[in-house]
Image (cartoon, rainbow, N blue to C red; front, side, top):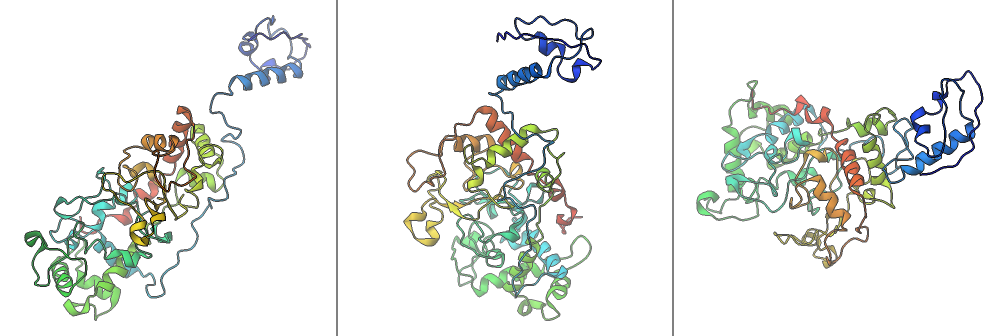
Length: 426
């Protein structure tokens, strides 16, 4: 770049380096710069001109109008706290129910072959997502499911559960994996035949199903500190909750739901920033720029669906994913409305860097794959695609910065919380 500027020097005592460096001045063409040590500062008008030129030369970089030291301003769609948990009137939270639910959540004897627990698909260290890296989650006898188990951080705030919204409450959902013929396999014939050997399954929970399940639980033995299920059920539900006639499926569902409502994640780097800590991104300007792209409706506009404290609008969208190998039509399986074809619940993004693979069927293996998918505007010619899904024309640096921001949603205080340790292990 050639710049012709008449330069005037003033003999001042002020050090010229307060305004600019000699290297910056020397880089300008057709300007003779005497020693700044012998002369004073350049007149302010020239300093402004040079600064303007420098800013213009960086226009192609992901530099932002906001810096890590600016006052924190975030999109109002992202509150700085999750709000109050609303407990069901018939299932108020108690420490005893939470403790019982924790034991049930980690207990592999909930499955027909003692191989699979809730924690098998929802690992605390991965934000209660499936840590095994499989496209779709695996149940008892290594039977492969049709969907990837979603993460459960802050699940207490969900208005719908599961990818298709089949369940409205945690209590409703808690029993479903137990009596699913892929997940835990507690589906027996009316004669009580073992499904592993008979190959017979049905979807309705019968008396034999519960009897076999309760029999396994009663024979579970002691936990790491010497407690039995009898101790835990009595503490949670009273002295009547003992024996095969005292324990009910309702007890199991409400206890597991009570434990799941303790999965509260609020300690990520972004949370610090969102609460006004200007230093949170001080050494990570790429993540700050990624956040700006994430919320900018003219750029990535991820916030169009990933809004709210947990970065989910809790709605169902067809994001251009299409049928996939499993030909899963999503929400329309529940509503029986063709307008809901291939719609799935917007997944929350807290601890998202730990929950690969992505999408309902795990077809995208990395966050880079996810960003490439959305940058292309999803798959072409998918019916019912949400109008928000469009080609984004993001640069490689833009994509990298958004991924850097997503990594700052990891909450290590949550994923390493010792209160989520397996109570059956010493």
